[in-house]
Length: 317
Image (cartoon, rainbow, N blue to C red; front, side):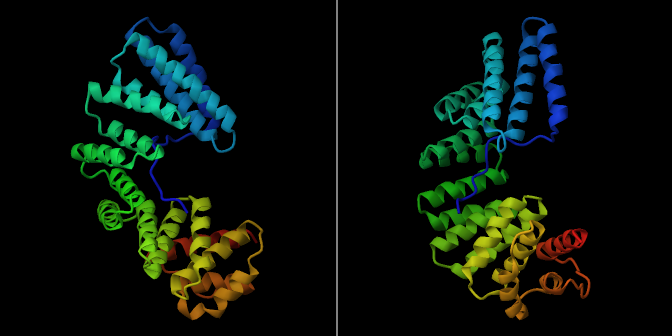
């Protein structure tokens, strides 16, 4: 599985109906705005709304998302014709271009931002784009610049670890994942990426422990599809250690919720139930015979996930 490099755009709370209303309102604002600074601000705001809408739909409607990103870029370009030194618009245009895979143009936009002011987010996003182009040494230099401005930027620390991993500088990569985790102990991507490096170093049991932790944290964040894939990855390792079977129980639960086949996984986990934590045993028993035996006491992320899974499974009855 690929390493998690954190992306360029940070999400905004969204609802499609509200997004449509927002864009309509902002289009009117552009039409009635005064020429000059007010119009540039209105165009930037419209571009931001279009980009946010595109991000909402890009997985299900990629063609429509692409059109919205292109419209956003048009808005940003118009704003920059009015004010060529509008750093925020150069930054937003770079993000939209990056989404369309127009990486060289995106880098030019981030460079324009950095000519105006030393913005850590612009250094960071430039690094992300350079990573997409496989220019890992340059990518690392950008994260270093971002970290000079904001030393506690966990995303830059994680991404520097990814770039170092790509260069097979594994011990250094671990150092940066550890730094990211010191800042944010619940940083699922950093746990997973550190696990990937341990895989490369053939420390397989340590690797699956960390990947399993990442999957449970992702579950708590509601990122079930990614968690599902990692639960499967860890379970399929069959290393005969607790985390593999705990991930198996979580995987079987999610398969059950999807109305997919899970019997063989349950049977395998049941043969190894002495290895798993108490909360996993409670969920496993429910999957086997529909009985709830005991109450889940939440002490860590595993317990929290199994408690949530049990609630979802019982709601399905």
